[in-house]
Length: 78
Image (cartoon, rainbow, N blue to C red):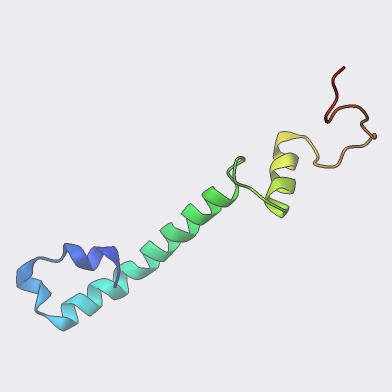
């Protein structure tokens, strides 16, 4: 059942056809909302992984691949 069926008043809550109808009508909306929220979280720059980081890099204009080798950056005291 969707979250909208929890909002049905007591008068209609005893009617199984009404509850099923509300669930049938509102389930696609709830599933679409959940999918969109999943996309928002997948493309959050702090939580993105893999292909999402590549796409974010294209949007921002940066690549994850470093074109030149970097030396002395990690664990350097200079």
